[in-house]
Amino acid sequence: MGDAAYDVVIRGGTVVDGSGGEPFAADVAVAEGVIVGIGRIAGRGREEIDARGHLVTPGFVDVHTHYDGQATWDERMQPSSWHGVTTVVQGNCGVGFAPCRPEDRDRLVYLMEGVEDLPYPVLTAGLPWNWQSFPDYLDALQARRFDLDIATQVPHAALRVHVMRERGVAREPATPDDIAEMARLARAAVEAGAVGFSTSRTLNHKTKAGEPTPTLTAEEDELTGIAMALAAANGGRGAGVLQFVSDFYPDPEAEFAMFRRIVEKSGRPLSFSLAQSHQSPDSFRLILQRLEEAVDAGLPMKAQVSARAVGVLFGLDLTLNPFSAHAAYRAIADLPLAERVARLRDPEVRAALIAEQPRPADPFASASLTAWSGMYPLGAESPDYEPTQDRTVAALAAAQGRDAKEVALDHLLSNDGRGILYLPFLSYGYGSLDASYEMMRHRDTVPGLSDGGAHVGMICDGSFPTSLLTHWTRDRTRGPRLSLPFVIRQQCADTAALVGLHDRGRVAVGLRADLNVIDHANLTLLAPEIVHDLPAGGRRLMQRARGYVATLVAGTITYRDGEPTGALPGRLIRGAQAAPAGVRIAA
Image 1 (cartoon, rainbow, N blue to C red):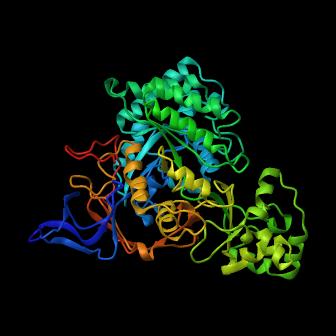
Image 2: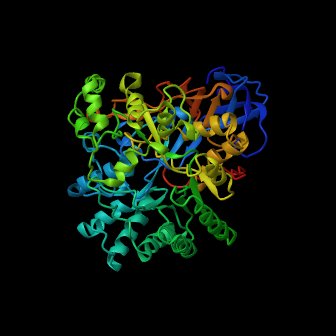
Image 3: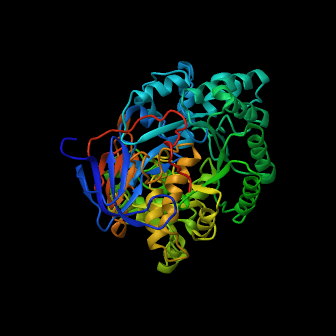
């Protein structure tokens, strides 16, 4: 460091340390990737960051992402790394790319395409397939460098296909031998460094051909067998967490009871996705009640909940738009965007499109595409993710005395054809984010479900951490807000602890120097935009923010004012990470 006492000193910021305690003014000193001083720091840093008037927080830990493919071809896990995220956990929802025999590659690609909206051409062009086993996959990631740290879970669908082949794809019950082999592979995965095992039990997860995910109906003995293998890992000391996605349908009591039994038998921590169903808007409270009872009984269980409604984005350059099933639109759908916009502005084409009544093959999809009373035009500057009912396409059309199709089409054509319509389909059942507030405030939940790296043409929720900071601690007008200390603790210390990463998530001496300097007063979430930067020229939705002054990963500045510095200190994380001696991360 030469004459400098430290690698980096962050001067004069307001530290929100992730403990849940009150913010305080302090300098933060970093050396060799670790926080070494907090308070009045006299020595100089090789690099100094002026944090006066800004927040200093731990780096955000996002436990629900799908960078499984992107991490094999890209160095920057954007959009997450634009939003203060310094650690991601991938391999969620039971989908991923290992273990995988060469002859099964297309099966896993088609599944990822259907479940996570990652196009087949992108994946086939981008995936190097320099692995077969899950430990091989970890080795492939270990050789790479990133702008943040990556932890990964072993996905159930890949295990099932690898062991059961066509029977697994067809969702046949696993035999005792099948279960034993999946358990063996899962144990080997966590012993090699996977942080857990994930599975999906939701009808929302389908292949591109519309077939349910191979894990949808996996029986309790199969899930228990795999969980017990994690319990037996490392000589019986146990390793790895369990991550489940479920519809909790048709019998939520029975489904949760099964989750509870698996945890009781295996002792492994389990988290599951929880959102408000619009069809049964109060049912999430039953699951929270059962969760509370389980935790009170000493079981390590958490629910992952979202910072805003989960919603689909429709646009002319996205996967779907409200006219996707119209013959008049399909006739021009393959034209470049500018040509399509010109054609759609032609009065004759427009009239034909508005007049047409399509007959799509999927009535459910059609209902979503024309759900005017629940669909909102998304602003082109800073989007409003808690819009009022008078801003729906249906309400705007009624106020203007126009057909809802015309209002929708006009918005899609705005901004040179880049207008986006937003359809919240989970956690907006009250027409507000009141359900999200209730779920986030519950003692047994953590923020999750951002799906960073997935749904590239329909959803852009990797920005959830910024929504927590802007909407929930500063801007919300339609209900109560959340405190800064609470939000930072949840998105840093609590998420890190959920997956056993106790070496990060707090601003504390001895912990990793994963840090953010944030201009909270001016932090702004920008609108999603479409870029064509994936392999094979694939397009994806991206979303940036203004106000992240600096982000540090292991003491190295990776982003300044939202722009990458070129540094890539991020690495694969192998397994749980203990806190250094004398440092206690849990609040």
